[in-house]
Image 1 (cartoon, one colour):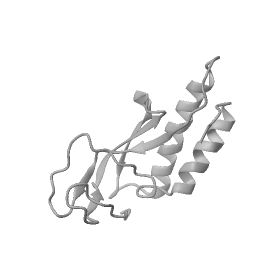
Image 2 (tube, helix red, strand yellow):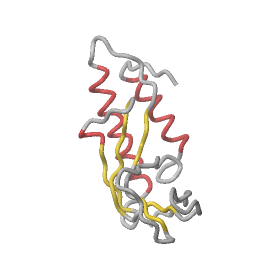
Image 3 (tube, rainbow, N blue to C red):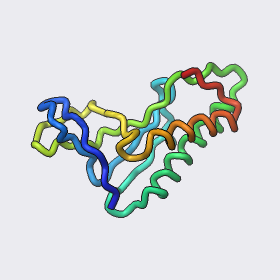
Length: 128
């Protein structure tokens, strides 16, 4: 089982916000996502390497697709978000609340280096 960090709940402001045992991660590139930029995780069954592999696969899929465009703008923001959080104190979390899972589900340095390496591999310029 993968143990994740707790974050601040947007309702009670305690450090009681926790990623649910299973859910989805949505990758956004400049605020937009492809259907193939979504992946599922299960903290009880998945190993960290499996989650990292899924993440890299989805990032690569996007950059491979976007890298094929003739007139592409530099990517200014890449986010990994999930609506699958719960408050351990029982607060009701709104459906549109989607905080970042970077540094919670996977390491921030791994995320950033994956984005930079794959963007470079597919000729996609980053501007952040």
